Length: 283
Image (cartoon, rainbow, N blue to C red; front, side, top):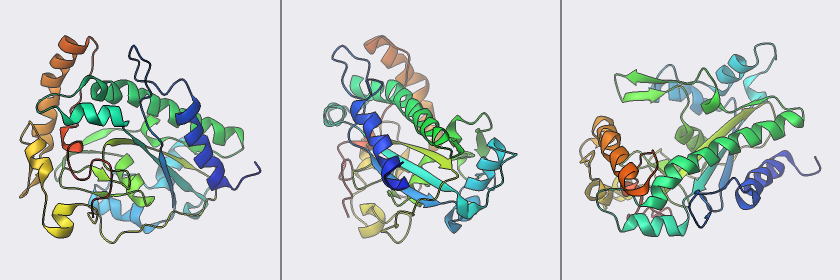
């Protein structure tokens, strides 16, 4: 490896999205599922991961916890680990389509949710394989058999590893009123991450506070995602109601996508499009 580890990892991720035939919506035109990615890094001993045990739930893994679950015979200290995180922005064509919708997702958006996430899974596997081949033990927490979603007294449900929280730790964005992660390329995206025993300088977090990029919290304006939500799951008083959201996704969007687009899936994304934070940090 001639390049610095961070540069090598960023190139590995970008090359997959730009060059791999796996990056596809699986439609007739074989369009790409994702646009140019963002990549960031966080140290395994960053105190924010311990804070997540209070902010999310006590069962949310630190990087060391998921690493030790995966490699019980490999010794590692938290400071020897790096969280490699990425943002996969929706393409302009997908965003344009979904802006027009008021109740159900566009076909491109639904394809990005299902087939685009398949791309994200393959990217996780690709990054892990590249690291392992270079001698760096690595795991994609979301692909671990130990990963699970649990009921939460505070948040209805949450998981043992959150891709959005990993991205926030890696300097890639802050949260908004609808719980979406607002990045320099907006919040119309998917996230992914890998934990590896490799030393990569962390990406500085250029924000103060976990909601710094949301106009509603930063300037007490906007709230357009409230009006965009067809499920009535977002409010200026209570933020994001996960029960209303998931009950709209299933079975309403499942049925719609199968009937109109001919494949099994779900999705919505209306709160991520036709809003000021769709494609940029509006603050």
